[in-house]
Image (cartoon, rainbow, N blue to C red):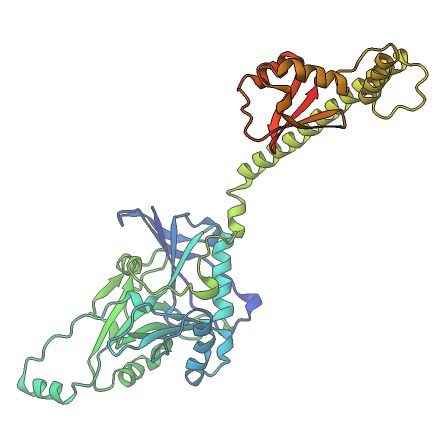
Amino acid sequence: MTTLVVQLPARDPALTSAQWQLSALPFILFDRRARVLRAGQSSLALLPKARTTILLVAARDVLMLTVALAPLKGTRLRQALPNVIEEHVIRDPQTCHIALDPIATENNQRVLATIDRAWFRFVYEAFIEAGHQALRAVPITRCLAIPEVEAPASLEAKLESVVDKNVTPLLVVMVGYSEPSSVTSPVDVAESCVELALIRAGQGQGLTVPMHALNQTLNALAGPGPLTLYRLTDVPGMPSVTAAPPPFENQPSLSFEALARQALSCSFNLCQFEFAEQPWRFRRGALKLWRLPLGLALASLLAMVIGVNLQWLLLVRQQTMLSTQQIEVLLNAFPKTTAVLNPPQQMTRQLDALRTAVGELSPTDFLSLAEGLARALGSISPTAIAQMNYRSRVLEVSFKPGVKIDEAFGQRLASQGLDAHFAQGKWIIKGRG
């Protein structure tokens, strides 16, 4: 099972939704044992396919909050989340997609991640259209681990740490660097800028800072607490910065591969609620994979329908031929027949009429049935018969209570050319034919 990790670009707030596009994306492909198979930069259409695709969402596109939530689930939880973040965002919370961290904090609180729903839907549907079936989206700040802060060496530092024990450390990672452009536009910059990912107390956020304001911004963000700086390196397809900005000089680096490996074990998935994977939902990108099987199934169904209709036409033709032959036999035997409705029944009635005319009994007449019954009684006394009824060419015989009927009685009736069976306390006897 392979896993593809892709780093998403940050959304440019100056662009409208009609101008959004995904250019070349850095990626790294792992096998089922977390070994690197491929790494590079590619457009969305040419990205390698994998069993699972993990999207690294830019830090400044995700707002993470720690809040106390009521024990709600499903639809009620989704309806309550916009009210929870309303005081923390300046835009309409209904336009935000809110995801919930599955792991609660120590104080039984939950971490929420908020992202623009339209942008997230654009990215999600673009990857689905490109054929990536199992999608996960994780904030890039959740893939950056805060290192342990070294203990202070001097006594003064120890005392200061006791005083500032409530100050939380700040981790800053430089995840992007942009050079100044010759022409300014909504997507160009007039001076060098640094894209930062910030982590404090398990929460993350991101921002883009001009180079001239980098030092002041870092000092203001860190305050009296400890500050740890890292810079993201070895991003596929990204030109390496020869000289890091002054605050990040001689600071440790974080490779893109290490960042991607952290994403493999990250449990925070932004694909929740309407973006959650539904096994029953037919994805548009899956149509290309099922094109050949669906074509074969459709061809088989068409062949079956054609075959069934041909068989039906053949049977109808045979039935017509048999009906025509029956009518011909009836009219040849009885030319005076004026109306033909049911040739077999009409032939039977005509033959019975001929037998009656010459004094011959029909096998279904009362006398024929009674004579066959008398011959089949055997050791059974005729006085054992309680009642006999004859109607619709059927003889119904009831015996007196207590009369023992041997098992060979039915066989003797059959030897007389009669069809008989026992039902509802009486024998039903019919003439064969």
